[in-house]
Length: 242
Image 1 (tube, rainbow, N blue to C red):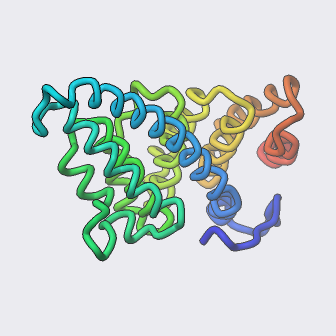
Image 2 (cartoon, rainbow, N blue to C red):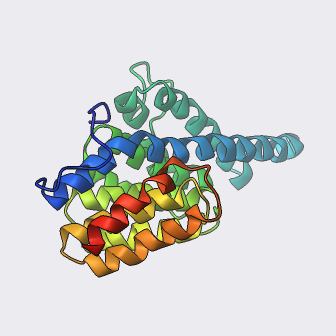
């Protein structure tokens, strides 16, 4: 799915929904990559902090202690993340053939009350997205609670918005992508999500609503020229203003 070549601006004879799909195809790697990069950083910090906490109490703590339980969960998710990073998505979900690495699905289940279990839901959703299994992607991305993760949350919402679009829940896709753009509040991610939401609105015949989102990207253009996404926004504004 991610390796198809699409043009920056689709011909006028192309259906609006196809235009939206083309945009998602073009920027799928950037969207998912943003989530993954943040996850690597956050997961590393959590593992390190929990490792220190566990060591301090190791001599006095049984394996069933909540701190040790959390530490074990983060260790497991670290192993599964290695598989994810090497694009072995099936194994990352279900664990390796030797049984030494627990997959994201099992981590999400067994450590459901911990940060490890929460992150496993997000990773599982991204695995399913890579595998074009969008119903399952929605299921696990919805389970991820990003309220306390201000860095990861916008990108996770963006991934969920795209998953909604793939299962034809267009209204949910628009609201989720718009929320992702607002939470991100930066020149790299926000334009992507606003444009995606705008293209879905176009496919619904809601050009005025799409124009409002495109204008938000236009306003970013006046602040910075560093994002490739804001440079093409005039084409989108012209299209919905006709």
